[in-house]
Image 1 (cartoon, rainbow, N blue to C red):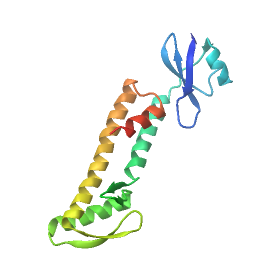
Image 2 (spheres, rainbow, N blue to C red; image 1 turned 90 degrees about the vertical axis):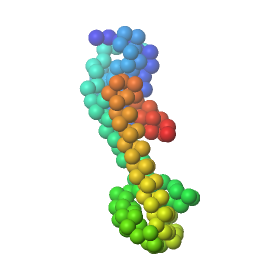
Image 3 (spheres, rainbow, N blue to C red; image 1 turned 135 degrees about the vertical axis):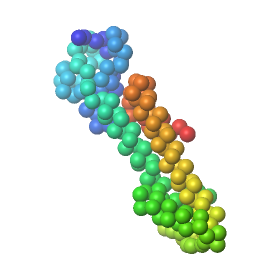
Length: 167
């Protein structure tokens, strides 16, 4: 099959596949292994290209990686940087449970920037709720992004990034 190429952009993060907008079929993905070898020739079209079978898998993996990076990237609560990596999530959970069982619970908490802060039960519960809300929002966003990838309305890593950036 030949396509008349209207535009071409990279389709994955390592730039080994291209998203081609064609007159005949709309969006088509091709890999570096497709002919012609020189991608510059794609824009001159029409040229034969084979579909890139793993584009959706690559984009799905990119979306999941983006969600995870944002999940562990931390949050700011009341001007204090709160770490949200796996270890920090476990510590927040433990402190949250302790605080929820003792209204007089207190501790000194080290923020993500290394600063120490005295906290009490209401503050720890707020931190735990905020961390959980952050994680939940990212999984909800990931679900919507994966559905959009499956539907074909998100087709590039830049669109994945833009979708995660919207809150």
